[in-house]
Amino acid sequence: MRGTEQPQSRRVGQQKTTPVIVPLSNPGLIVTPDLSGVTEGDEMYLICGVEGSPPVTFKWYQSGNVQPLFTTSTQSSASQQIKGVGNEHSGTYYCKAINYASMVQSQPVTVDVKMATWKKCLIVACCLLVVAVLVLACVLLYNSKRGRETYSPPATQAFAGV
Image (cartoon, rainbow, N blue to C red; front, side):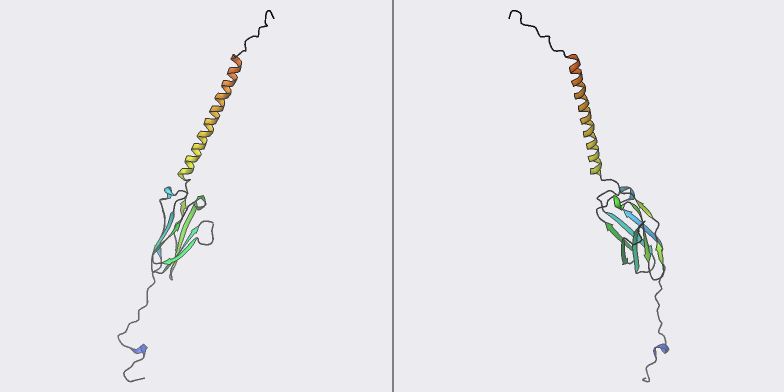
């Protein structure tokens, strides 16, 4: 050692800084569009947020699945997009957030995917078509029976004089 250098442990006036890792708290899961507006074919976003020290690993789950649907690491919130939502996306979702100090889980959110409007219109149109065909068949059947009961062919006359 040289005479002017001091070992690291004996330096005067130097402070060591240790990062403080704040445990996670206030986990929340938001679904957009609003829960009442999730319709087949739409896009659905699952947004998870927490308070605490980054980095945070977010995991999204659908009840009944042991494995997460998505996993990502970020600062304090993250979102996942599900394109072309279908009936299979109906269910209960929750997210878990993990940092070096803790793990927290959001309250579950239940998503009920509604039938697409065009499907509802198609069902109504098909029902109206079936009703119209049945009414037409009944009218034709009624007229055909009524016509036979009231119609009597004229009596044939024998030729007189032939």
